[in-house]
Length: 205
Image (cartoon, rainbow, N blue to C red; front, side):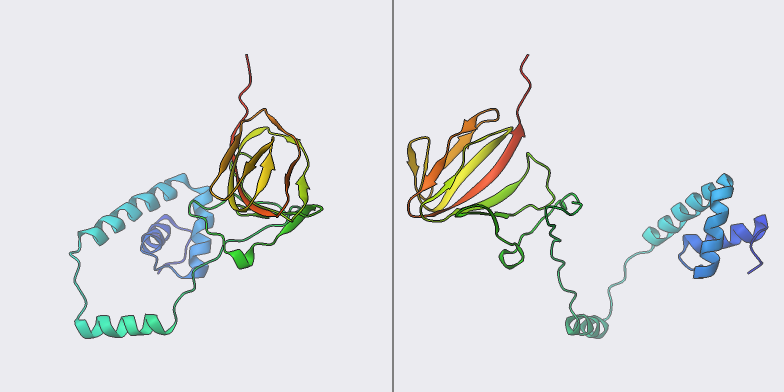
């Protein structure tokens, strides 16, 4: 291939770039030229469209059975592990959750937020109003009263908890709407709750 820097050489390199066949050093040099030459960027876009059309125009050909079997055997030897989500401490910069998020119990720490009260955040990095967490209260523990800027959904997984004079047991549900305030709620025998944030409080007229 001719030395880059002339229009003819750059166009030839752009064609190879569109096919993914340009050597790394030449690719970097050509991409520097793209920044200076809008016409070259447009040519590359057109070449990529042609390359895509050519790839789609070819009728698919199934591999021979022995080739397929050999390929599958090689893949099975070295399976790619599924990525696990990354968790953040409260002081670290947080990133948005992926569209499909998984949380594994052994990877999620319990954090003490008060005497006999712990939380396990299931959606680290999620913004307020779209968080889910487990709340664990030890026997005799108390969660102090607190206001709700967001709706709070509470589902009892185990044990019992007393909220606003009502005793809730496994399977019971409680909603605190945005703008409301909880008084202290307690658990004599201990409990495990699933807490989910809802939409934020709407401004009043």
